[in-house]
Each structure stands twice: as C-alpha cells, then as structure tokens.
Length: 119
Image (cartoon, rainbow, N blue to C red; front, side, top):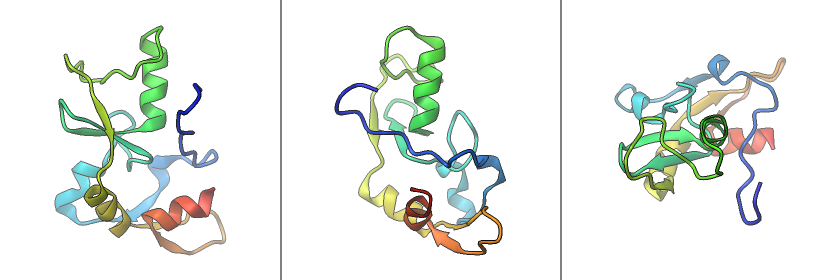
C-alpha cells in the first residue's frame, strides 16, 4: 500500500456471498460489485462504464492482471477514472439493512453501522 492510500475494508474472513441484506429491488443491481457480484463494500465507481466495484476487488484484480499499481476497469474501459461513492450513493447504501453473520449476533444493521461493527 502506497502512502496516502486508503486501507481496503475487510470482513475478516466472512464470505460476502453469505451476507443477508434488504434493499429496494430496483436498486439491487446498482449496489453489486462488478467483480465479486456481491454487495459492494468500500465502493469505487468507474466513470466510463458506471459500475461500482469493491476497492479490495479492484486492487486484487489490478495486481493479478497488470504489473503497475494503477487501477484498471475489468470491463476494459478505454479511459479509466474511478471515484469514491457520492454523498447520495452513500446515503442510499446506508438505507440497506444487513444481518450480522456472526453467531449468535442477530443484529440487523444499516450499511455504515455494519462496517463499524466489523472494524
């Protein structure tokens, strides 16, 4: 990790595909990572193809496919620019309710509280 880079979010070994969450049906495709096909965590948005990716998924993808540390879009966009999720996108993510996968915890948390729950 280079100086000034943000540490990617980790679920500490919990499989993202096992997470149960509630989100409005019409938005479910927008909150899915284009690489792992699970709920997006620590989202980065490709401005060329309008897809969200987990920061960790993009870092792993870029390391496996290219020598340099630049992030590259898996959809092979000619111009690759990534940005953080906007305030409005983060507000929507925070409306998602995620069930804690740790037994015996039964909490159902909003997106931001879920991330804090794992830090």
